Amino acid sequence: MDRSEDGQGRWVVHGERTLYDNPWVRLGKADITTPSGSRFEHHTVALPSAAVIAILDHDEEHVLMSYRHRFVPDVWGWELPGGLLDPEETLEQTAVREALEETGHRIGSVQHVVTFEPMIGTVRSPHHVFVGRDVELVADPTEFDEGVYEWVPLTRVRSLIAEGWVQSSGTLITLLHILAF
Image (cartoon, rainbow, N blue to C red; front, side):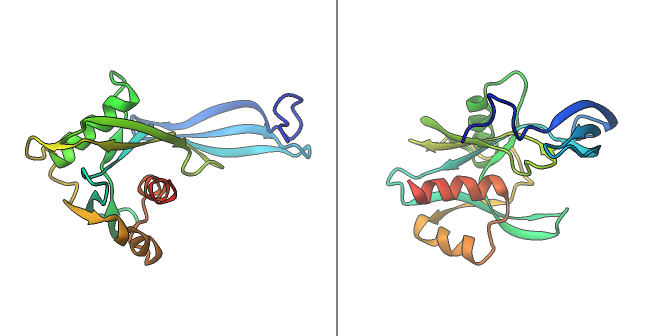
């Protein structure tokens, strides 16, 4: 049922103030009223938008992934290339640039598959998911802190996910899309 037209179920935002702001994160507090009538302040977080790309080999049997450490949660895991949107670029250009910087591969064709919010209840940070095909290794990577990339068989991806080796939301959504379609 679509309730967006009659406003039923809508949370009303009376205003929002910034508590902290820099290029990487903005923390705010919104004065809101819930559909049940409760009014209170709710924290909000805004992060830059990001693009993630799954690079498939010519036979579409392997995906290019890196095994890397993430210091904030202190975990190791498999990830796809991706990064923050450059305001001078389209979403697709960001995905293609990140692929080239992190892997040295030029993408021949790019397909946008979905845009999602990784933590929709509190955080604003649209993530744009792409699949890249017709790839060619044209250079050495220029990003050196993104882990070492290797071609991972798609037949192995399900077990990597099931065993907890894929924790990045962008990578997880992208790989699940590939496995589903």
